[in-house]
Length: 195
Image (cartoon, rainbow, N blue to C red; front, side):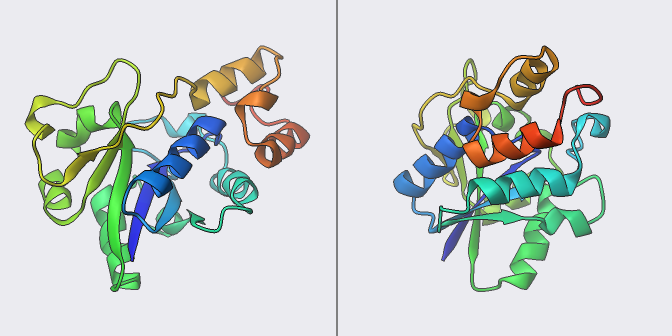
């Protein structure tokens, strides 16, 4: 079974994430998609993150009716900052019969060559890349046998847009899956302390 790992802060999850996830399930060989919630991205400030379990919970609420999607807290128990190579090794140990591939936007593949042991990731795992506004595939990765470009819908919505909109006192109801939005609204997330 091939598992597509969709890594991210999901701070918070929004409809763009769900559209990409659903498109990947329907238009790539993956059998299941796992949202892997990152407690700390080495390239991001941790202070901007909502609590790990709150972000995980919003994903769980969102995907309740999506049988081929799962929320994963695997990185919560790994050393921080989180490195993808370590997460993959841990998952491979726990699920030796699964093939793990990565799902990322064309914006993230720009920095792939800065990732720890990225060559080993490329040797052993397929990377499915979806388009992001203004980002192409870097030349060094354009013809790599393990990088597959999937022409998913172009999504311009971002979690930082959601957070900023909330701070401005505006509604983000249409930008988030309804169960996650209801929870976020009830909990008053992002109104003041989180940028």
